[in-house]
Image 1 (cartoon, rainbow, N blue to C red):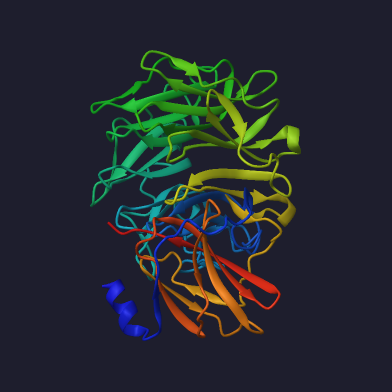
Image 2: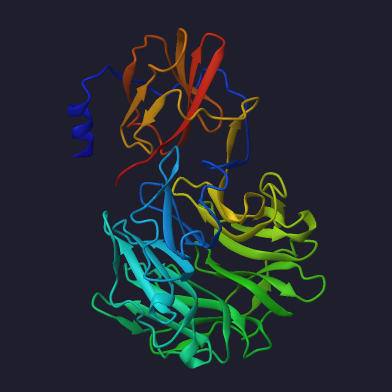
Length: 462
């Protein structure tokens, strides 16, 4: 239907073209780039969570310190970060905000709800308003470290430290009518700090946490149907484990990244090989690392984002490739100290990182590892318009605001190959990109002695 409407609404020149590889390549390099404005929130943002909707737009949820510390969600529309629904939609202070998208594309946020005695609450955005999912404050007591994840079958699950059970681990799910316990509540031996929830490829829920019942070491447990059981040995880290982060490889192996709190407090990654927790490479930091976040790339390589003491607490990202941990782009690439780092891959396969930015008065900043044109430091935001972005089939471009005469329009793919050039121009044009492979592209307009650039994402719809 969307494809039909685009052709009905815009009776403009429609340009089709085939991919051609014989053009000269364009000089590109890869590094970490800001997504929109740096420090885009209106004030301090904490408990930051990042997720992508099915169309590839990044969303960020956070506790909005500027506005009575309530929950807020913003999304990047291709040009700016804008609020999704009401600016502050929670009933009271919202801590430990965690964002996820349902299979149908609705944004859900879980948090510790001080409007309901610090209990867990989940809300979703229906396109117009934020609505409670089940009862607000559905946990038995206060809930810390809330972590929201959807199961492969589409049910929202929330893991948290359960104050009614001495801050042990509890997991609950929404069954369509109400929130119910998954197994026993308070199933860990002791307090479960830095709790992180994930599903293996066959739909079994796992949690990783700092296990106060086992000398504050790292522990992973899974729900096997009747009960929560240990995956391997409980307390498998060498020392106390902080900032535990859990993810699964495509083959179903659980990986955990954490800061191993024995000198020199280095970050490590371990995986469960079916019998034991074994190191993935060696320690990949020289010193203390915090705010650790682990994710797998589409090519099944583990990536880890963290705050690195050796680089003035700036952001670093490493990946495990060929038996070694190596930096992804520049090391210490953030402008200043970072807190609350979260690493997520976009649907098109780009790593994104969000953090609370010390150089921007602890406002939220999002960066992505992307290609840049050598010699160009800024992509123009206003001189011409390009939409929809992401695009499925028909891309509209409005070039009437560009000063002077325009020579041509070019499109490059992310390996630097020019795949299209057009020299017969009007103020408004439609380009058929339906046959393009999904991914990121650069559109370049050459006018007089100036060039103007914008990026667009091509997505495919099943």
